[in-house]
Image (cartoon, rainbow over all chains, first blue to last red; front, side, top):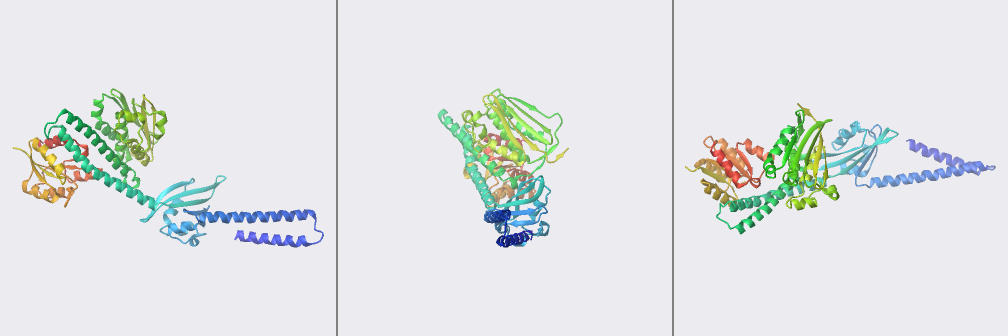
Length: 395
Length: 123
């Protein structure tokens, strides 16, 4: 309404000036004023044209777009927003979100908007079985005052379905590969232990080499299975109360023989006070710790040292594992958490790794809203660490 | 007297290898290529121990376990699951249904499997 009144007012002023300009005795200063008004009119029309261009662009976006004022009344919704959510945009215009909370498709977004959050954020929400959205909520702030909110809605249903299909494929393929691999493993073991008759030294050498390669494949397949599990963040994480110290001890115990074989000096710095139980996905955290620990052993030379320490500080679990291993070359540090990446010195030390261990560990830590990092000096050693915010602590 | 071990396993080659190993260790071996036959042999021969695969034709290993535990005459026979499955939920389910151990095929050496069998039979 305000806009309409303004346009009428403008037309009135222009007409008035037009008639005045026709009158005799019209002075120079008045003419200058008329010119200024004409310029103003031109400018105003240009702004209107630009506004229409911007709105047309927004209307043709692939993403749904919504603008609300400071009181959460919808000022604008592009047609894609209506298409994605199955709504008629005109029907939601100028309505407050409180009037729309019964709309099944809109209500999850309204719940997000109703949150008293001062900053911008994004969230993935499943509207129904066939619609998964990524929603970006941007608070519009001018001079520290929230003047409205913009909402961008991105339909990610196809990506999600494709991702799930890919994970199912990897998982199924890995299981199918495991069947012949484990049978081959058994037959090679039995050839080597003499269960199937005597073998010559040359045959033993070849069988042992075959066994190493078969074990490499088994590890790779198991890593792929782990990846399929960890990439399915939403569905496969089951958090429970976990005794973290006992979990670390379990990981350490599982590698005791390997450490003994390499004569590694191991130090387990337990926290001064016993840790309370922490809410974690026990199996995934075991996998993350195991990958970090296996790496330390794999790349630490004989008689080297490995130490593990953890503590709770500022409502965060801090964990670190330090080794005197081969370290990471400076020019390869950036890629160390990449999928399938193996540093050049790691390949030389242990050709059989898959390059998935640290990628898996980092994904698991991040799925717990944590952060993982490392410090390393080539030929001196590495420290891998992570922090996880503690959601809930029970003593 | 030699102990009797039943292998319920649909992979012929895997079953043949395990059988050879068990025989070389002095055990007598019974075989079943699927779950249905497995239950029949268990009820008929009452073996001293069962090595049970999970992914089996007809009825799967979990169902075989259910049937064994539901039959008082054979419920006390120890069952070791030896499978390619190894998700935590599979392990939990197998142990809850009454298996004494759960071994993942690709993660255990044949000697470790033999040690487990001997330990359980000597209890």
